[in-house]
Image (spheres, rainbow, N blue to C red):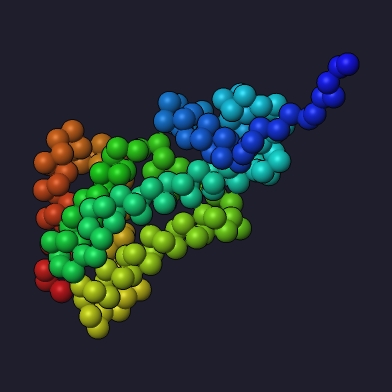
Length: 191
């Protein structure tokens, strides 16, 4: 007797799509990232990703959320509870190194349009913001947390993109480290 056929279920299509998108991103940059390409990579029908992602921006938000979580892990691995300017410089360097080591993901996180209503993306970015705010509170008691957090993030983020875009030398890790440490100290030692 023939067996009844059941509909094909991927398992976890949402995760498979994000994984496929991350692979495509690393291989070909943001130009390689499309729902159709993700479907091909994940081995599903071209329409399958649309079950979880309304459009490319929604997929990019999911990928960016993964990136923000990886960045948060990278920063806390550099220093879980920074309490000095030197500690903060180590965290800043980790941020810049993440950008240099994962340039396509970093650009998706910060340069690509994202789904503004993505709770997953918002939660992931809030992790980074909360971590930075906690550093400022710990290192600079009495400071305007919002203002100083924004200034620090702007400087470090600017350094990351200057290195990525070839405006600052990134071929030698020691040159990157020296520049990041000098910038953080220049900004904070004179406070």
